[in-house]
Image (tube, rainbow, N blue to C red; front, side, top):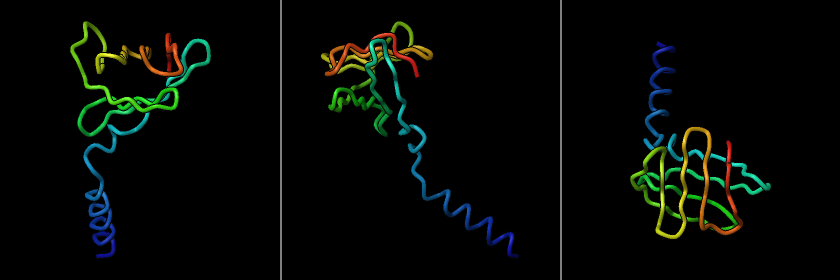
Length: 98
């Protein structure tokens, strides 16, 4: 009976997490020249990019390869373990790696 109570307790705690918690974990990027930025995916599917003391919310767009997010001014692109960020404060953010 005690084991059942423990299992039910763990199941109840697991139900308290939101579905997007895994998607909200931040990725830290280090770029050429010492520049760095971080990003995470919001629950809405936008890229939340933190660079140069500012936050940018970038919607996803079609990419030829990799994953691309842009608001028309700032662009975040990721392919495999590499990324770049154009138009953001504090750049340039080129040849970025996790």
